[in-house]
Image (cartoon, rainbow over all chains, first blue to last red; front, side):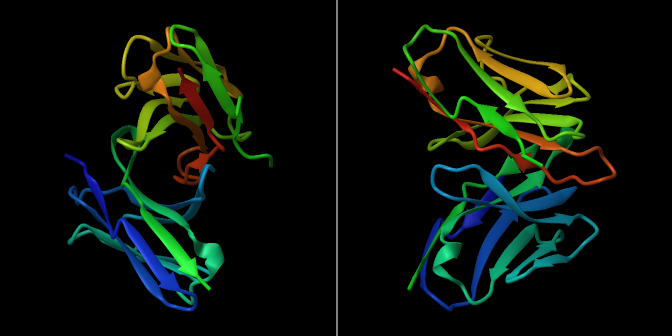
Length: 111
Length: 115
């Protein structure tokens, strides 16, 4: 079963904190893993995609890592800002190119 | 680029009515995906097209759901007849040709309410 689990389900932090969002998957035969951001009532915005041959990807204050052996990916957000408040979803690519999503982590960054 | 375009953005209909959702993928992308998002089940893939051909429709919940992609720039998802449990946000996503990128780009979604 290709489950994707995200912990924590919700997170509230003060502005400026560095934080880590976790994503775990049961099948280590992974093609790639993608992190998305979803604002309330909006679509998904792709943040980072890590290929199975890669260990991490960075974009600005975001860094995503992938450890296939342990079935884990983390999204690190440095110096969090109120504008980072959103739901963060990870998705692994399964067969036939389908994305299998986790339930997401709802992040609230308060001033 | 305008990104993935979906219409309508919101749809409210009565049970039993036919509903048609529309999607225009990003120009040059050759893969198109329809997803459904609900509180209970999260995001689920319904159907996936590659070069306008349906490749995997195992996520389509029932025969009431059908999807078409008559050309590279347009796809529809139809529900007939609609039921209250179909209420959800339906997303369309597209992806460039393999070898270019595996990244999927999502549209803004259509929020469907069936009363």
